[in-house]
Length: 354
Image 1 (tube, rainbow, N blue to C red):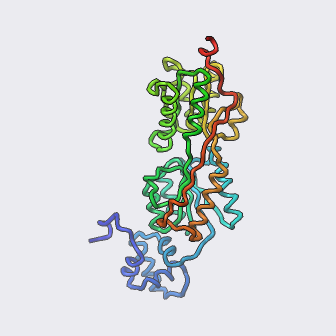
Image 2: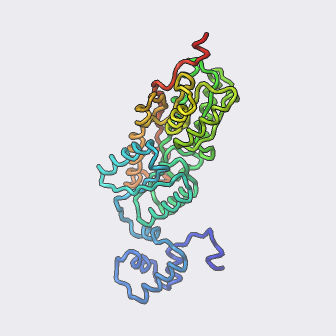
Image 3: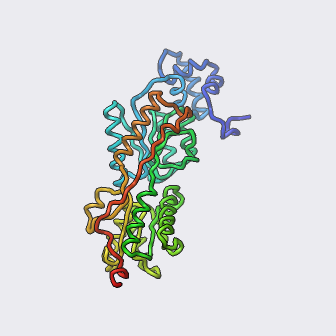
């Protein structure tokens, strides 16, 4: 059967060697330029690699066990200030230990993420940090098949299993504190601006918010849910929908600070005063949130520490302290969230009028 009829078969060094009529070591020497190979033999190997559509990075990794002191860092959106501190945390540990970083901006696109992963494989990186909101098991399997250690941020354990170490953010404490704060202020009509609901993390934050409402005596079915895009414009568009809802919410919890800022800035265009008419809570605690008017109440997470911890875990995997598939769950870490109360929330009007 022709190779084209087996799309799921991973091409190996044996396939290349067999097609070229040479040994596996000859294929390795051609790829890595580690020994002189006759021009005719080299041509047969190169033609076999091209015909089989084989990316030689996995061959190089399996046969030339050399570290390159480079790592790949996948993030969802370089323009999102959330990632700035994560990147700084990764850099702080990487530079101290002589690692260079290939920064890959996926734009929340899984196809783009896979292309970056394949490019990182070609560059023979020692490991990969997947600090993205969107991820797929296919990406993890691709890295695992090429024996590349990896650490993922806040991804579902059922997807990760034994493929990668992980850092998990415990949003429950911070989101519960945010809802408790708003309920104590007398708010009874709530809205939530979620991230894209095909993201597991967006669904998690929404569900934790609704569970907290129920815990504090608010019917979660009464909450007005708007699906956003984790960007400022998503918050602006959400404000339009909130304005037209009946009853109009007096408090809104946004799944990240960028959308919360979009809500605040769009409110001015609709003559809605923050927090007198609408209390707003975000999530991330980006620096800009403390500088806007009014300063943003938000659920805070230690972004610098997340990046630094992820890099420290990855180095242990690279150095062999732990290897993927060898009790890798022992490497997992959980970080907590906390509520930072600022001036974008206040007592509800109906509570003031009583």
